[in-house]
Each structure stands twice: as C-alpha cells, then as structure tokens.
Length: 86
Length: 449
Image (cartoon, rainbow over all chains, first blue to last red; front, side):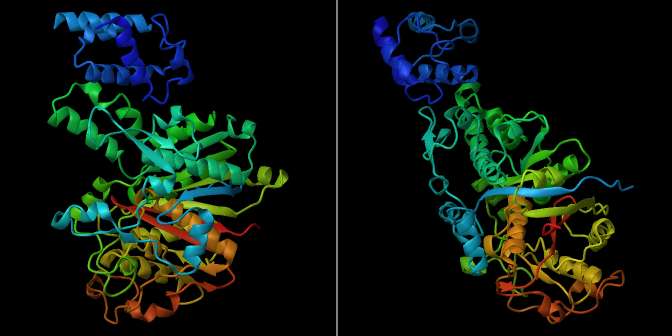
C-alpha cells in the first residue's frame, strides 16, 4: 500500500472524529502533528488507533502503540511495519 | 446542633422533561393536568420479557441531539452531535446522555440566574450534581465488546470511564462552565436530586461557597428500567396516562421515568444586591436515615424524625406538601400517614408530581423541586392525578400492635389530595424524597421574604 493511500485512509478516519480540527484535514502531510496541528485530545488518540486497526484490518502491538509518535508519518510507518509483519 | 447560617436563594433553573419541548411547555402541561407518560417502544420491543411498558422517556431527537454510532461496534454511541450547537464537540465526547442533559440544563439555569462569566467561573461557585444509575448505555456496549466479542480493551472506546463514572455529570458540567469552586456528586438513590441541592444549599449557608449549580439527572436507559421491572415494582395494567396513581386504591407500582433538573443557588444578600429575580428561598434542608436495617420498606418512625428535624429549623407550616408519592402500595400510605401525623388533617394540600411524569429516580427530587418552584410562581397546587379511589379500609400495617400512627383509613384524607390543579395562596412548600437504603430528604422553600 502506497504511503499517500494510507494518509488518505487516515484522513477519512479523522473526518469521523469530531474533536479533531476538521479544517486542518484539507492539508494533511506526513509532517502534520496529531496534537499540535490537529488539536486532537490525547484521550481521543486511542479511539483513532482502534479505528485505524479496523480500517486497515490489522492489530498493533501494545508496545508499538506506547511508542507511537504524534506525527502522521509515525502512524504511516507503524501501519506499514505491522502490515509487513503479516 | 444547629448553626444559624446565611440565607440561600434559588435564582435559576433548567430541566429536561418527558414529552416537553422546554421549561415553559413543562409548566403549561403540568398545570393543565396533563400526563407526560407514554408507551415506550424500547420496552415493548422486548415483549413478554418485560412486565411494564410505560415510561416518561426522552429520546435523543427530542433533546436536539443526534447519535454518532461507532464504526467499530454496532449500537455503541461514539459521541453525540448537538444539533442546536449549545455544547462544544470536545465536551460532548466525554459525556453520556445524562451528562449532556446536565450541561444543557446548567446553561439554561445560568442564563436565568444572569450570572456573569466571572461569577460562573469563580472559586466561589460550586457544582453539585449526580444521578441514580450508571452510564448504562455506554457500559452495555463497552462490556459486551470486551467480554462477549473478545475485543481488546481499547476497542470498547477510550471514554468508558469519564462517560460512566459516578461524578460524570458534575465533572462534565464543571469542564463546561469552568467553575473553580467545589465540584462533587452526592448519591442517595431516589433522593439524589434533592440531596445534591440540599448539599449545595449547605455549602452556601455555611459560607463555603456563594453560588452553586445543583441538581439531578437520570438519562434514558433501558437497563435502569429493567432493573426495577425485575423487582416487580413498576406499574402495569393501566393506560399510560393512568398508570402513575399515587394514593389511589388500585395503584400497583411506579412509572420508571427519565429527565433532569438543575437549579442555580446563590447567597441571598448577594442575589438581592445585584437585582436578581428570586424564584424561591430555601428555608432549610434536613435529611436522615431510617435506622431500622431495612433496605426497601419505608419507615414511619424515620419520616416522623425527618419532619421533626425539618420543622425544628423553619417553624413554617407548609401550605403544600410535595410528596415523594411514587404510586407504590406501601410507600404512599406510610408517607401520607406521616404527613397527617405531623401536620394534622387540614390546612394544607398534598401534591404528587410523579402522578404526571412518573418517577425520575436520581432526577426526581430536582425536577419535583422545580415543579414546586412553579407552584410558588403560579400560586397553584399541582394535582395527584388518578387518585380516584382512596382505601376506605385500614392498611394492614395500621392494624398491627406496634403501629403508633393515625388510625383512620386513607379515604379520610380525601380533602387533602386534589385530583386537579387549583389556585391557592402558597407561601411555603415542603418537598419530600426518599431512597432505597432508608434515606430520607426534606427541603422547605418559600416565596421571597
């Protein structure tokens, strides 16, 4: 799966999360930060992670979630890493 | 020991009520003798698994809300949308339905109180709100997801705690209005609504706070209904409008209802000096326990002590007694006889608002206090709807050797129990609520004096 395809999927998920700044979703890049740019409440991150698992049909390791950075690229990297693990 | 404290005024109120659009609609319907109770589709959907099928319920749509359903699991409300844009999305994300109602009612109460932002956000402003049950709709799905579907804990949602904890209503309201004073929840079963207002009253009376947002809510949830249905204590066999019938000989249980009531309290002199409209003055609040070790059965002695404690402080003889009056066989008769034992057989009237909207459990005391404030404002007594026939025979407990209360049947007190609303000069009202565990609460309110 291409990185941009993954980002598009993430944006689709974020459009369903009402506490995320929706205007900022028109210009999401790899460097966009969930916390500082999208103003995502920290408690909402785990809901987003659960939605990512559902959409991309995968299950993250708990350790990977604990270590997850706050930029979009960090999530893209984790999705690719988890997909490769199979 | 009683300390003489400061005087406390009620300066604002807000609520959400079954089958009503707003406070004015509630007022109009109550004083025109209407019932707010309907057949409940959610109960009917379970057929013979559920005994009772009537309720004073409120749908999301009626509250101006829309559910955002989870994309992961069926029937789990991820969050709610406020279609009237009264509450920010961030606050909605941490709230169950009852907490949303508490926030909406709070905004209305503050608007009526006309508090400034600085007053609302002050260190001297408290929030004291609770409910009688848990955040059932959230819990239902979160635990089903984990235990039955075998999902990971995070898939049940990250807001199970804040949307279901005791204190969730006060927590959500405090996060919304940003008060810096006391924020807490007091639980006392079906006396919760009045108990929270009573506690807030004491915070102001004894100088800990100057203002308080206080009350109770009970969010619509089938679990709450089913719990009582299982106890065989819900009304059945009557049309919806006739199913809540306090004091009537044929009453056979209460109507499980839902709603919310929030009042804004303020130290009296401060309210007067800023020109606030005083809706009512709280004369006093008194509460106690039966002390007889019985979880459910009402205690005549406990209620006698409740009255003694209340009247010791006020000295006011009420023009109206707003009873708990649930429409349960024993509860109503013990309550009526304890009122008569205290106040005599004439000179006041009894009002049972549950006859019109059912038993709102943790919200009951708060919504019924609002109904009582409306009685003061309208100078009208709300009725005991459906109290058509009163028992001409003595109650069984009245024939026991240990009984030391009035020795007349309930029918002897017909004149005290109106079946329709009527006009009367009302200066003082006593509000009574009781709860499982033998907890008893009483508040006396008056016109501004």
